[in-house]
Image 1: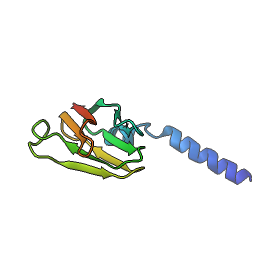
Image 2 (image 1 turned 30 degrees about the horizontal axis):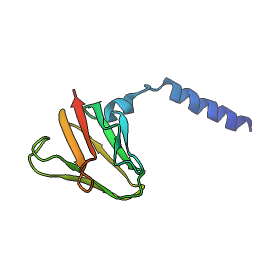
Image 3 (image 1 turned 120 degrees about the vertical axis):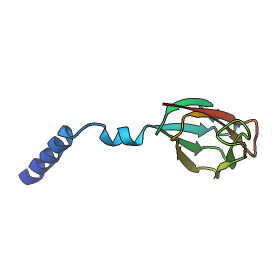
Length: 119
């Protein structure tokens, strides 16, 4: 039993002296956006993040939603479907280029959002 405790303490000390956020700094921060159940809304609707950050969308609704770019107002002029989100689905995307990324639900076009990516 004493060896187990000493081993645990050794691992804890080793973790304590490692650089605290080296992996996090390389990967960025994960920001959550929720498709709100029975509301046809995103929460938050607009969000500002940094280059390298990730948006994780979670569909808590009972309906399917298709997240898509708004043609002519984002990185390209073309419609781009990001994800077909079944109820309960999760979709993530890491943003590597600064700019504004307006999007909407292709099925329920009143559901809109915007991601602003800063340096």
